[in-house]
Length: 413
Ligand SMILES: *Cc1c(COP(=O)(O)O)cnc(C)c1O
Image (cartoon, rainbow, N blue to C red; front, side, top):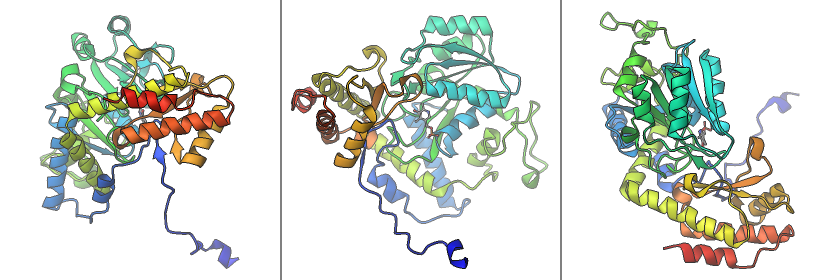
């Protein structure tokens, strides 16, 4: 009896199989990021550590293309960034307009419901995006305090155009939030040009890092609104710190007012900054900026264009319209004659390549193939196409042999 309660000493050291993660995320992290994450711990007020925090803020300002002072990391996966943004921006009872065109749009309302917001929505079929006119009409109709939407919704592989959305929100005195988890570091995220107040992302897609850190950037006007909800924790209070007048943020961990105090020169302690994740996030941003944002966007575009050329040469049909397609994850219709899951299993078991399944109304209908970050490279695209061709052939769908790889190679500049 005693023995069954003991943890077996027989579990092996972690040694996962090598796979190409060519799905909608997570993807393979850049080895440099993994190496940075094996560096030694520092105390959280060590000047080396606070310097790394300041450097991380400076790096992510460039990644987000913004001058926003408040640009830092929320500890947790991308969803932590979304939840921190919404719970800090949206007061219970506040009216919130959510653009919903896929799984992650629905997630925004799921979170907003828990906050107790009054939700109004602009709903679109999966695979479509909202026009500026539709957004303006919804702002006029609902008069919300906050607008929230997704940039690239990986569930549909479509990217919502955001040029002009910030200006519209300012015109109607609305705070704006956008989730760029899937696009950050692979597709332009033009925070200042868009004029969006709060934007959050993640590492495990185009940033080429592991899941577990959510970079966020906050405009001064949104920071002011959040700071008006500030409520300093009892144990670290001092006479010089005053609370804001607006309702307290109903989450401690995701209270961005407290997290900003921690990332400011005040260094007012909140949770312990996730040291290892900070190392990883910092290294990921260094790699992105060393490559250069424009080069990186071009590389993602090249990889997805080649992938699409290959898929089409196989006789497959791409999901959604070309005009709004994300440049880093591609949806493709599963041919009616094959079982999509069997093809995915063959790719994983025979080739060590993972591609994605789909959610909601697209379940069983499309695969999603990612070409992101460290994986948006020629050999991985060609290997994925070759493997898919063989897996499809084994399941009875006979694509013209060799055509996919040839077409992708021809498409590569
Ligand atoms: C992948 C993805 C997420 C992931 O959130 P996690 O908490 O990191 O799992 C969030 N939003 C979008 C749009 C995504 O594509």
